[in-house]
Length: 384
Image (cartoon, rainbow, N blue to C red):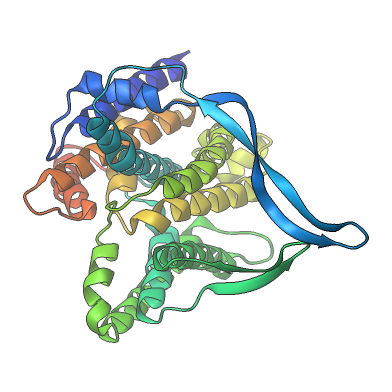
């Protein structure tokens, strides 16, 4: 009940911030118009449509040329609020994808940060501690400096050869995602001996890998030439140019992984007592650690793949929420995740509302670092 109450409050606050953010910009749009535009964009299946101009004509032996009609689902909106078409396009086509991507990325980073702080029993831990952010940076920067042609031709039955290609932006995100996972699982492999992964060894391995990958990024920047500005923008975190396709991919990855983390919230509570005590209480410690590390690495990689490296969300938000709701991860994890989405949406609203748009990572650091210093000065830092 307590978890549901805090989650409902966090979801309500996130919804308010999303609507308020969509109303802010060069063109000011009333919040009620924003809500009407969003409702107008809701579509439900309303039937099936066929068209004669489908696939073909296809050469079918013994039959001759055959055209297969295309079949599409027809969608209709149950709402028809009178909204200016320009406002509708601004809200749904321009602002909402960026806002929802910010909410998903903040949600992912805060949930992973919460798990990492509990896993390492250290309030200073964040998702980058296992090398995810550094690995993503190496992957993205390497692709920007040495772009590869991500295209191929595949042969499909009846259709023949079809060329499949990824855009430059999609290639950067893909390489960032792969780099993040390679770094995270590399850290895990280095720290694992005889089927066991000591937390202290994992922490030291993460620091070593982060340092090495930071050197690789610095070297790649020296080789960047005219791409240096793009690299710096990616490393500072960015949400400009967000598209619905990016929102869809992130939304397909983040919620299922969060569900995995939430399913292990009780086990994470027990791990706070120590590994020996957790074993005595029936927890499969090593399996739990593997699941938590893998899910945290994947959810962080999904967040940074499209948004770049955004600092302090996974550090300050879980730390702050722990002071408010307590250490029980069954309550803390969903509350911190929703607060992370709210925080990043608000930070990105500030970033894009400035006279010259700033990378969102600058805003999160500018807000998060002083507040974190305040917490360190006013409160004693202890192990969780």
